[in-house]
Length: 444
Ligand SMILES: [Zn+2]
Figure 1: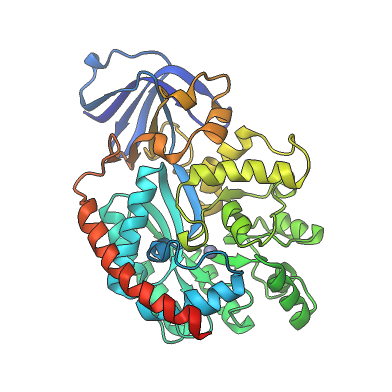
Figure 2: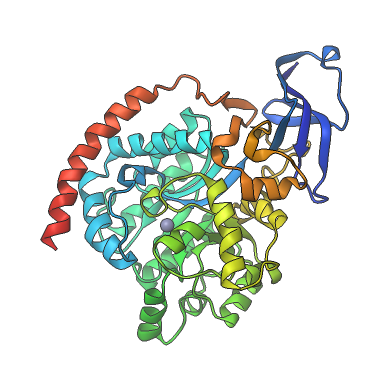
């Protein structure tokens, strides 16, 4: 018995040959892609629990958001048009201290996961607080994630000191080991907010457990200059001298890289989480993505938290990335649509270390895929499907999302989910935050 059979499908596989099947069938069993047939298959010959007629629709791998802070949805639109350091220290950190607790992480993560499921993301990589709560919500909604607690030198909403953050990560690893959807990483917030001792401890923990180490790196000119002033090294050189660069590292942003930093990224197989919209909004700069790609560095695309984006629709970040690099290099040939789709699928899977399990539609991989209705004015006609995805689609075009072989969103509805309840709770919380924001804005 197959759980799901999708037939009459145009399938964008993102396999190593970039195969596209124009009228195929996908059969899903035990959460995995069990069969891909390159012609129309008579499903009557197979026992299939749920049949989906995909006539006029595109099936592609679910998108992978490689860097976000999901529960920050509670701060969407709360402090915009401000520079990063001021934004962090005057608005975000004080209000996180005040409002980020277990209950609000549940609420913010629920909103984030709902938004991602409705816009075609099937896996996300998160750095935030009260990770166990985020993990419970994510698993309940059927989403895949790599989660880590943001560890930093000073007290956070969930850990009075960084040692406690490491201890929490140890407990999370035990609690979620062997879980099909939730994996645990360790995070150090950044080179400027973690001491060298703490960075080394986090790396040691990553080595001991062979887990990913997620960090913000070389995000702003301010960070670059500050690390240079303190250590006479670029942020990347500084981490290299601490022995931190390796293939388990996920370096979010990676905007201010010298050519020799790029050499280090290539040599140590560091993964990059590119966040084009956040970098534009905070005017942090332009990450040298074409150079990184030409050196074979793994690159995925992330939204970052919605307080600096302000949504989790990864299709929009893919489009922004395409435009950003063409403009900043004064060269429309510097990237192409196929590379962008790769970054949002297989590239992201490689950055997270999940390339054998997700990122493409291939037999034996987990069934994480999305169905997009192509019968829409802005998606007609189709000459090149990659161009259509990058330049014309948005997350709103995603009709159905499947993760681990389960339908988690169908015809734009998330099963067993009350949007009204969520809206009411978020409204109440935002009224409280609004009052606090007013105080903050005028007390500093
Ligand atoms: Zn971030």
